[in-house]
Image 1 (cartoon, rainbow, N blue to C red):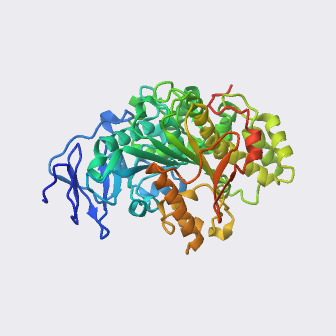
Image 2: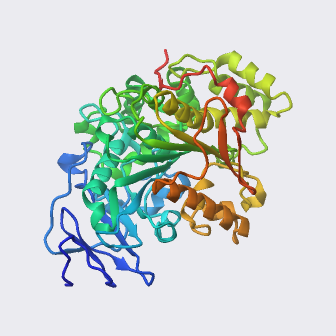
Image 3: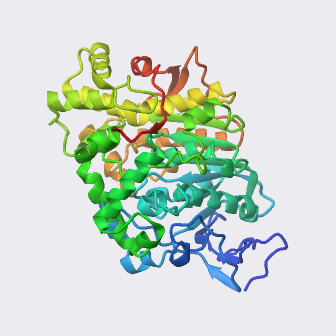
Length: 526
């Protein structure tokens, strides 16, 4: 074994070794001089006596641990066929809580900015080993250390189970950030310059982390891409958990749910989520949106909904970038077979269910919300209204309002919108949800994003990706993202399009419709 330096890293090795607080890890070197370490454990497997518990620090090991392969993902929903990517036997062993580090300079004295990525996946799917999340290019060309991680999703991570702490997936993320604080210097990173970047459910997680006492001080900057507005009240989360348990024929307790093999739980969440409208009277918009789990505003792990907490100053010391894509909901419409199929009745239900005008608790918008949309967009078709109101309710307005809450609380925020249209599938998806992911990592032909960009991504995509990556890495380095902070009077934002520009926020009509709406924990109805 090559001798380690006193600081804990071997320089210039084909198999670089780094000493972490738990033991030595051996990664893989690259010709460029950069290195990657995959599948590094940051917590003990949450199975057996640790099932449904808060993460426990990983035990130390002797010798050298080889870290060249991604760790086992947590149990996955069947969405996008993600369940097929995980072996049942492997997933039951619970070795899910691992992370990966890409570093362009594995020298403890390098002091590079650090970007920690939180993946999305509606809180029911997601794994750090997907090809679109490979951090090599982002780290190498951006001169940053990139960390990606697995956290518990679905019932394991977010089911509200009696006797278990709420928001275990969020607690996993905190544990990973604590690992970064304690170890990243040995990989060439600066623990004082950590930026967390999250997309979709990862952005919702980040919104929570901004306000959680347990995450205070673990990062100084944040980039929230397409923040979902779905946070549950304890009452709603508990009622949904009772349906999970009923599906299994058990009670929603640690003892009885813990007796069910991990591999079985995603199918249970899928089955309950698919029933949708059957629970509409109790679950309101949550039932219509087919969302079975989400962060819970439990008063402990998550003391308040992010918008309320930020407006009160909870995250004022963290500089924020927040934004969304223009056509957020169009991808969901395609996946549900609704493209070109939305009827006037379906549009009317969506407008009543998701339109603004409901109570501050997040109740449905009612007739007033639907009338407001029709008046504001008189030329819009039924399908356009269906898409608009759900784009606004689920992602666009929660993202904008997160930035506005941060400013109201005395913090600083920058806002953007991605309007560049995906060329894949004949361009039918526009600037859809998830299009920002390949632009951030620069992996334009890998994984699911390849469907959005086509077999041969155009040069325009490469150029836009270069700009997005420079914005995010510049922000992480403390140089700002490349445009001025958002001002609630001028409302200037970065428009990422074929010709990027800085302009007034484009979705002004929607912003006006949602001006009085208060985003918070979704309630149990009736």
